[in-house]
Length: 303
Image (cartoon, rainbow, N blue to C red; front, side, top):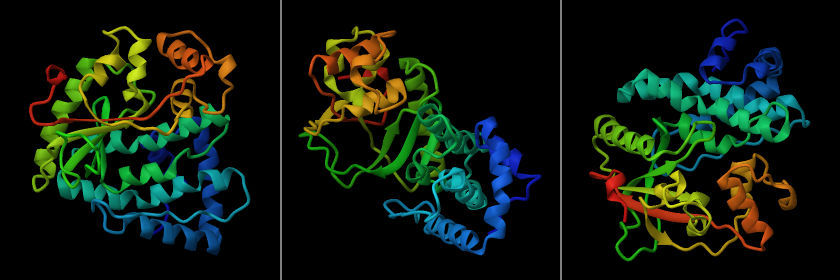
């Protein structure tokens, strides 16, 4: 499964929203991947693992870790894996009738992931390769403001919640995508109901789930009732309480680096003040778990 040649690779990377400042280095390092037999074998094994049982729910995919000296190639090698797998992903999308625009916006999360890495570390790299396997295996789709992952409920521990094996859509909120407004969320949910009914008609998704620090109810103590985050929370029925502290989650997503010292966190916005002030007062943040029925769900379906 060859990589695109050096002339074609830049356009493919641009389509995947790879930061422009990283493209020349990726094109240059491509020759090392192609010419080195060890790297070429590793690439082929990685792609084979990634595309195995494409689209299957619940398939466990473990991309092998490159045993290579730390440096740009080691940090960026997953880019070549995803680029080499791209024809398989696009073929699966075409088979399902997925519009080309949905494919493009979904797979552009590779570039967003690299932007997150650069914001945190100041250099090229892929922040979370395992997360991106969902996109390139046909499990996750960007539809408007939100991303929707085909999955099963799992244990939500809610008295009126869906059964543990129920097909559901796991909602994800991508970074670098503007406000999480109620109108944008309503539009995404409408797109999702239409998209999955059309392109996965054999799978009936009855519930939407979310597992995020954005669902920590403590945020309501700091944010106004009409804030986007509080209104997002109100869509959900609480599934279960999480007792494990997750302080680095909001620090990472709000400030860009989970290791930033709490004492120096900025207070420029209401969310920044909420996250930092709560931690400075000795409090902790937790991952919230929530769900709501998908059929007919809009902002009017809040609890």
